[in-house]
Image (cartoon, rainbow, N blue to C red):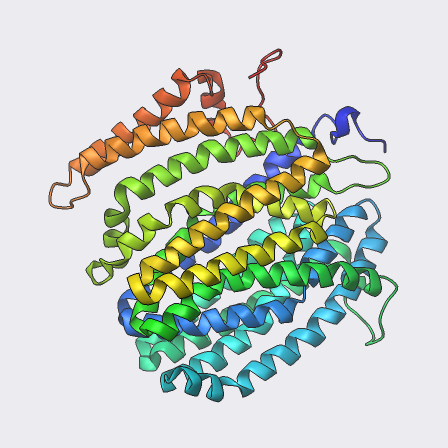
Length: 509
């Protein structure tokens, strides 16, 4: 099959991209529904101290996830996408990846279990021992679930939805039961372990359903694709390692300087922020695999440009809500005990805006085979966050961690966009105009929300602010000429509209 003109995927390429992006978003939202409920339950049930201990254990496990994955998931996804038309070769790539993944993940999980005591002693928090062992077991299942990147590479996102539902529902049920049974933080950690082990088993089952039993490695001997996968994975290991450290370094430094309670105040809004990144992750899942080159297909540059435009507009609206109503969001979601977290969430607004298209540009760089160019960017990102945290956290507290996160991500996202621009030869002037118009609309929405207020004592103010803020955003974005009302109707009726979201013919904005 030859590539369609312009590097497109044929006449239905846009529809398939939209469908995959939509399914990816549904998969994340399905998991998010359980995760949000569990986060709110644990935050209230464990209190800031207990939630801080759990967050610290998860932060340490997050660092251990790096060597556990070893870059294998993203590396194999790239090569599977290149073999999308050859089922047997795609299965062989996946089998070689799974072999290495299982061996490394098991070893890392066992090591973390063994080191739980010394790590807890180093932090001076004895209650950290068994939660660390629980998340170590979860680490094995979580690492296996990362192989769901193969579903995106093969455009079989529905399997991601199934595995997400299984993991999230089992984890939520087990964690709630154990915590209510009196197991506390340890129960929450082992509930997570039960959920991710179930999710890992379901992932393997789904991989077999997708490509057949050939995906299961039959021997410990390396296959023909192992060297190529490992070579690209070694580069991704540096990139992913830097990004993982970037994600966890705030929690680790805050825990070291300020204690578990401060970790809880910082981590709770950080978990809320994760949910706001789901649209960007979904867009990346639908578009990024279409940038992988093969003998019969060129990167779908047009889809990338449309996705970037959509995310700029969407994240401007999301960020406006965070800036205007952070105290309300924290009060409703976490309770009055997390009042200080509202300032943290508001301080993270720049990062929230960037993270929407951060996933798109970084994952796209992987599929374009440009992981090596990501290395210096990732290292610089970590160093900026580390230095600012060490300077600011001891002096101004948890807000210092938010500032470090914002500053480092302000380098990370534009640098990855530059990598994609160089390879795809993008004209970024339309994106710059969309950025300016979206920020103007976001400012109008934020102003209305601030005027409406965030007090729950006058409940009528909340729907009034929501309607007024949304209207201000839509009217501003329309008056600037960024969106036509026809596009708005299409966006509302069929989001996410990566495939259909087009400018009128001859529109040179």
